[in-house]
Image 1 (tube, rainbow, N blue to C red):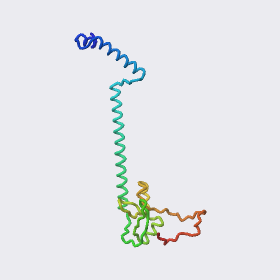
Image 2: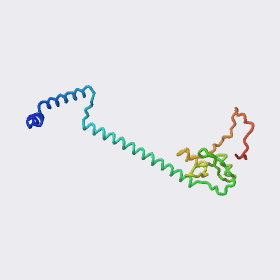
Image 3: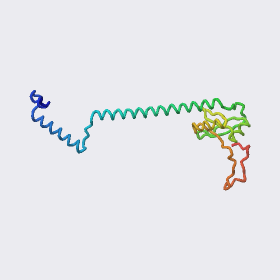
Image 4: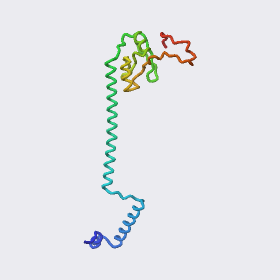
Length: 178
């Protein structure tokens, strides 16, 4: 059985000069591959590598989708907690000021709610573009899920006076409004 090269020469489709040149080129390619100048890659290896890359890309997309789904679930949980445990503040006659997005906001609350806010018994939390009052227990659960949802939660027991404070002899009055 003769080689393909010999068959082409017999058929008149190739000549000895082209055959020699093809052999020489093949030899040079093999030598370059041995020296590491070019890389001859097996098609099966290339297909396996492409499958691995595709699988990795699929895993990354799935992880991103899962993170987005978890984020939405947390937002829904927070919204549900706020709506179920919000404290009615429609009868508020005292303006209570707090900071939201570097802006001073005002919430109208009752005198009792104002005292509870100051003592850390209730908190102000963000709900969509507004805010609501919720009990401290619910606020702590919300804080575990999303820190940014808590707009104001005063810590209990923060009445301790620092010894180095130059104003320690001048306590802040309870009825001071800013």
